[in-house]
Length: 125
Image (tube, rainbow, N blue to C red; front, top):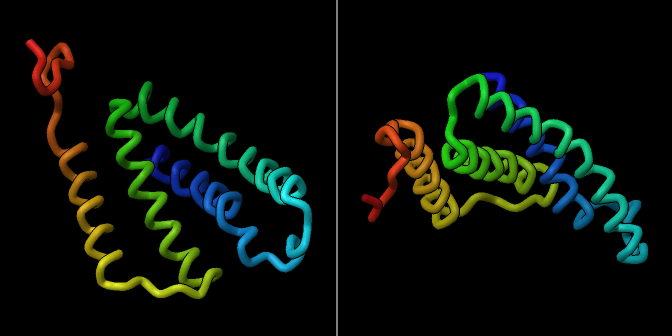
């Protein structure tokens, strides 16, 4: 659970770093370098949460690298939906909702089944 909370918090920072500048008034008309530096400053905090989330998830909570990545992507979309609605003032349309549901299905597939011993994947021997 600690991993999920850290991933969620890190994605709040990531989403702000990647998309916040699209609506933030204080960055309007600023040089692209300024926008990039502000985004990097915000992204620093994303890394401060993402790295421990992955360490804890992998070493203590038993997630595989694949599971961590799929979870992170689903959390990213969840955070982005809220951000798009609240900050960008964009509504979630049916086609985006369906695509999000398919990604949630991918998360379920990623965490519901344990890989075989030895980690042999599709097409392996």
